[in-house]
Amino acid sequence: MKKNKMKTLKALARRVKVSGTGKVLHASNFHRHLKRNKSKGQLRRLKGVKEFSPGFARKVKQRLGVA
Image 1 (cartoon, one colour):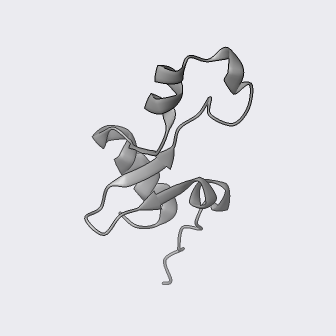
Image 2 (cartoon, rainbow, N blue to C red):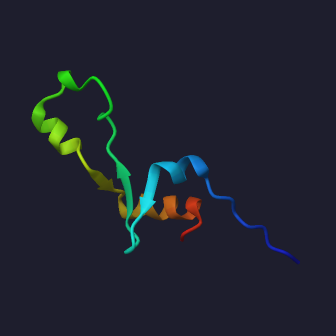
């Protein structure tokens, strides 16, 4: 009997990236617009990519079919 394959959640696949070492990376929220109301320090902290916590990263990988 054939097992069903799990489909990749495409909305999630567009938002995250799995690194070579297996970390799940995502862009910061609150960094798209309305930036002039935020402090320069806050904007610097929001720059770049962040890593998901290990528990949540496991769930994300499962939804991406990488686990």
